[in-house]
Image (tube, rainbow, N blue to C red):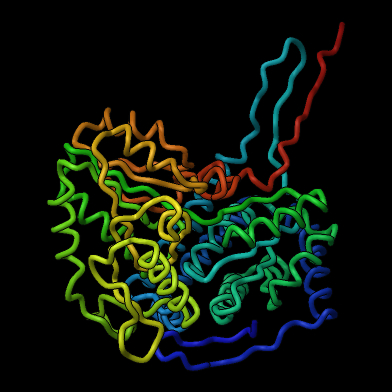
Length: 458
């Protein structure tokens, strides 16, 4: 796949970039390794100041950075601006809290003294996706760089200018060359990087297939890895829920970023007693939305990230309909230039259908009716994925009881799943392993070093 910017609003190539040669790649890895030797010993206060400066620069350049996101992957401009703000908050969060997270942890021992100290490990390789091109990187870069590691990034091939800009921001913030390095290479070269002993940790956010290959390469080379993969999140609406709130959050949860998020509320599971009311309100909210240029603040529906992405989602909908699913709203491409597709609601979905078994990475809501709370739980768990989920009920204790029975890494009560710096983010089952964000995200690529001082006998 060529490394180029293709504007999904026009499907026209904006800019094409050359891959790094093998020699160029080696020089960048060597530089990162050399820089690590000094960066690991740089005072924590200086590392934290670097993150603060990156956050400041991102806010100062928000208009420029937001337009770059929208140009390369089509996100509505207001949502791109929100991503930059969220990204800056991640850098601020780790700058502020790193000292607390890195404190020695005393151990109870029968004699002597023991404590666990988090220490850096080396170069962390980040393989990141296009859907949140700045924020996905921040979640890996911020805790590792402030913790003393250095980061090399292989970003998605369709957001090369975002990738280059992140490296530029670090340099403008005063980072030594090699603290954060953008590697403009094809995905097929990642397995070779995994063999490099200078790289000590590997993190990927992407598809299930990419995750399996990545984990194999990491395991073969005895490297710690973190995977954040696909999701088919259940959005459960119980019979005592605030329906207006549930509809509002379902629209945000499913259609923000044109539905292109691992934690999108892909399966709406609604109890029969409130299903008609919910569906009528949900449907009315998404009809007649304005389609347009994602740079135009009046637009409510923008393009998907690429022509390939739009074609795949339409194909999944078409196959599901052939298998017996029904289209309540949408289901087609929008007749205009660009990677556009209608907001879609599917009903009548059964096991064995594409919409039941696969993740649909686009603006398609799968709607299910259930008669009981237990049926809602069973349907929520009837997937190989286990990333996030939501439960809506006016009875919070009931909602928490249901949440406890859902096999995912995250469940939000009366809210769609969202990312924020102080909450751990990650999944289970085929949605991956490990955590980003919060104190837990700080530890993934740190060494939990035990230091024991025996008691000296008189």
